[in-house]
Amino acid sequence: MSDPSSPSNSSTETSEPQNQPAAQPEFLHGADRFQPDIAEGATPAPDPQHSTRPRKQQESWLGLLQSLLVVVVIALFVVTFLIQAFQIPSGSMENTLLVGDYVMVDKVRFGEGGIWNNVLPYSPIWHGDIIVFKYPINPSLHYVKRVIGLPGDRVRMENKNVWVNGKLLHEGYTIYQTGGRGSFPSDSLYEHTNGSWTTQLPNFVRGDELVVPPGSYFVLGDNRDDSEDSRFWGFVPRENIEGRPWLVYFSFAASPVGTEEAQAADGKLAGLIFTVRHLWEYVRWNRVMRLVQ
Image (tube, rainbow, N blue to C red; front, side):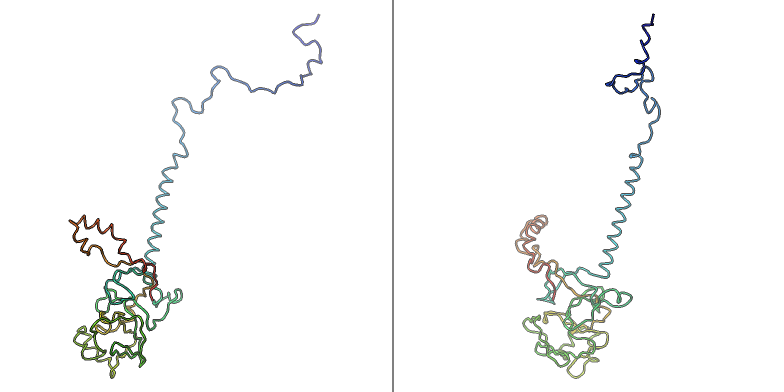
């Protein structure tokens, strides 16, 4: 008699049903069912994201500081060697440059000397160029005038006309006010000049002409009757010339603070509010971003 608990024959021992499901994973029971990564009461492992955050913040601030330093260095280079902003404070160059014009000065065009001669596009100074220069009597001040005489030129003025090397200049940029300041050079001007220039001026006069010495320039303002220029204090040394104004980037006709309506405002705060409200009315929009010629 066969054992009912054992297979009836060997064929059933090796045969498997065709649709038998795949083997299932083994489930644990009891105390070994769960295996946590960190035992209870143990110190947690450091989070890589949190551990690198202070370092990343430090690197971010360092990068920002480096960027600011680069901007400062570039700005210093531009102001020192390339361009600089100036405001026109007087009417000596009207109507080419007006009081309240804000101009960008090209410091490259007339620069010279050193290794920069081989790098930057320098140009010589010609008749009619407008230049910004250090005032010879007080180099801390900057003046802007038009070049009339180059080194070696012979200059004279008579009846509001200018002759250079015996040729009459046709100056469409000049304006004259009532009266006038007479001819140049002449004895009538000597008493109005700077003290040292009064004694030096006769040394450069040949006949009725002024001869410009080497390394110097004779300059005049376009507003001939309202300009303190080479007629009254002398020549401009080449080393004093810093550049040429090439762009009016902004221009104010006048400050509203000086108007009667602004002065009628009660108190400083009211005057300031009035100025802010009417500021744009005093902008010369037709002069903004205008090339200087």
